Image (cartoon, rainbow, N blue to C red; front, top):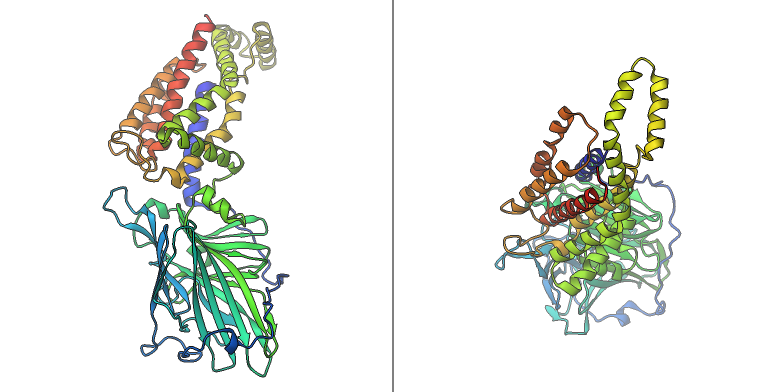
Length: 535
């Protein structure tokens, strides 16, 4: 039974791995006709004139898309964590270079740049409006060419747009040292003689297919947290029809395995999110604020928070709004996240994620020792009564009821439980799955070295040493495990370590390390139990 349990666990993990690669979490159907109850955040300066509220700046071509003759400029923002390039076109983010992350695990590799491969016609967080003539490519103005955020400080970048139709739009970005979070306040002033009815929209775009083939993009797509659950979509999900969400939206964005671009709600500032494939073939997310009505002389302020950075569980959790849900750890998230926190806890003391994995493996083995001990004892007992079982089957081969009765009496006389070898192992399966997901999708293991040739625990072993050793230990473990199979079945099962070895060749070395250490500990455990339970 032990071997069957090992097979079930191993193959289940393999199937789970393939399943998570091919299918996202279940999509929730949203009623597009449902109206949001969110209300805009109205500025205290409702009666202030927009001309008095902001500096007089030359207006670009009013209400027209960008053309070759329309002036625009880029503004650089430098912080301790990133260098960002903003554009006056849409008052948007062109790209963000993360200083602490590289594309490859070599010192000369390029830094990770987010946003640069999105639709060049619609940059991230580009602003348009519903009910107001503010097209995608409206050019804002800014009175600076660049800003630098000092250590422990914060700075603001302001974009202005003065319309010839009697309204003004201002975007204020606030950057803080030591944070990937950015505050965004969008103000609309009505200086016309008629009421202004509309809403603010921020647009994000994402490539349908990544330009670079990298396993980090295996899970890339649109993610949002709506109605207390995570929603995930691939470009194929909106290829023929858009999707609209309008229930309790906390955030929306685009993410791959390790990085996330998102816009977060602030005081119900996200009313709806529409996902679609735009005319250029890119994924597009349109985040809309609640509708507002501005009488002449009034203004409104809509606040959001932006996040462009790594999917580190601590960093995500610090942003609030359940942003850590973007780190999808599967069906057993309730177990996976504590394991991930534990992994980081031990890393803070030992300074090596490989050593931290070994410590967690030992702890799990100790915690489950009573269950596995009971399981192995049960299998050993079953192995001892196999000769008598064979005799009973032969004796009662023509009387199934009599055979079952005799077998149950045999179990009772020898105090063995045929299910005792399986049930303890089944209890451990959720933990195996949870740890698998934690190790597979944790950015903490990305480019994290272990020792010697293992320089990236999130990538495969370049020389396949650990998978081969893992296969050898699995073979030894199988030879030591009590078996109830006939000789032919046992020989067939000896091929399983070979299958697992080839399967683990492409697995992250951190996951292989866990399985290897677990096998070694299991061998020691079986030696101890075999010594206690004499034949």
